[in-house]
Amino acid sequence: MKRLFHNYVNTFKGLSTEIWWLALITLINRAGTMVIPFLSLYLKEDLSFSISDVGWVMSAFGLGSVAGSWLGGKLTDKIGYYKTMVRSLLSTGFLFIGMQFLNTFTTICIGIFLVMLVADTFRPAMFVALNAYSKPENKIRSLTLIRLAINLGFSAGPAIGGLIITGLSYSGLFWVDGITCIIATLVMIKVLNPKKAKSFEAPKIEQPISAYSDKVFLMFLVAMALFGIVFLQYFSTITIYYKDVRALTEFDIGLLLGLNGLLIFIFEMPLIKWLENSKFTKLSLMYIGAILTGLSILILNFTGWIGILVVGMLLMTVGEMIAFPFSNAFAVDRAKKGNQGEYMALYSMSFSIAHIFGHNAGLQMTAQVGYTKTWYIITGIAFICALILFILNYKLKRKTQPKPIIAIK
Image (cartoon, rainbow, N blue to C red; front, top):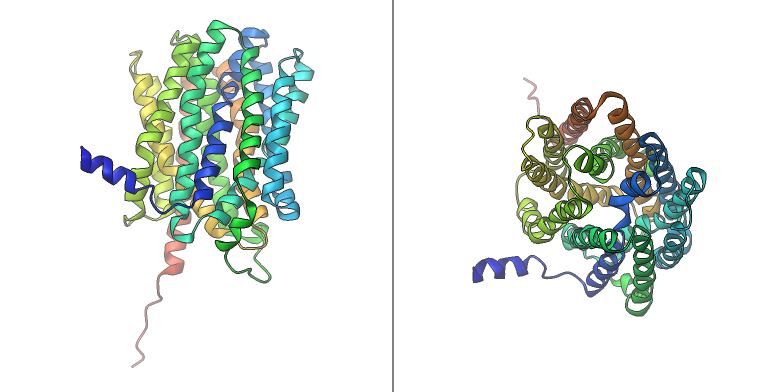
């Protein structure tokens, strides 16, 4: 046990101090995003929106996320990642607090669009900051540490969110979300010095390749958008399914979602370190992750046993642990110095596009054809994603293989 603990601790060694601070800021911020997994429930239960209306609100959520990711990339390349992150965090805090005072369909759509527009300018800037503060040999583990912070926040957030809803009301979530964003801003201003990033930055590449002309990267983004559509069902459609079909309480749902974050916090870093040293490519690991995530939804149709929800969550967690860190690393590797904001904005936008279509499509399908058929369709999307990644991996491997020398007699 002592050796196991020692090996676990060793997986964190060598990361820069700035990466640890960035992880802490991300943890504080994400611990407050407890409203997101409960947003669809809040709209349906507290504001009495129809499932169809909830779907359209979630599309506004996605549109704001797309616009915010694009804007974040532009701001990062223009004013720098540090100023972009500070302004995004602080503004998001006040916008979250204001969201609780909106109660009509139109104002909620506008409000959630503005919240996500401002909040998601943070994401491209954070990826560029991570790339700047991390040494090249530690990049994947640095990405994984940030994800650990995100998931530790998510593991605590939904559980605490369920308690807040049970003890107080949904409005309490918006207060906590806003306050934690403001606290994260203050911590960042205090401890994260952008000047220290210079020692890790790579030499500037003249005339870098535009992300829009990188066909491999664009194909990869399509796969990531499809993966996002599947993954995001856990934050809208499946939470309603848990309550309406499986009769779970908000607290039960919070604990189940919290299990996901807790498992990632414990196991992801050792798993990633082991996979880094394996023979698998980043893309091959991603399609394995996509298949596991698809299976996590497919098995919900097989039995009424309540334990299948835990099995599904375990499959999704392993799939997520494999797919996300290596997709992040793949995107960072493709990015070129000088237009990193552009690359990371497009990467963020692939998941924002998933927000536009994923939540709404899932909710509309459950309203029209029911949960069983919806889970089959979502599983099909996961396997299409896996197929795209498989083909892309095959093409890249062929491109890197040396051509055989043909002897001329």
